Image 1 (cartoon, rainbow, N blue to C red):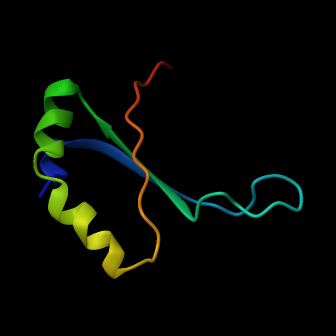
Image 2 (image 1 turned 60 degrees about the horizontal axis):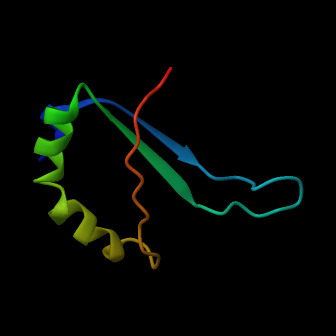
Length: 70
């Protein structure tokens, strides 16, 4: 679906929000694209995957779009 547009991915499982504090997120999936064109192409196809998330968990996903700066 969007794999051809992805440069790399990283999935981080939350284990803590600090000493004796539960994690604010269960997991964070980071998807890196080579450029804006590739991200736009992937975003145009991502709805089926995002819409499938409720079939696996009872929380709503939060999306953050950012820019790699280093």
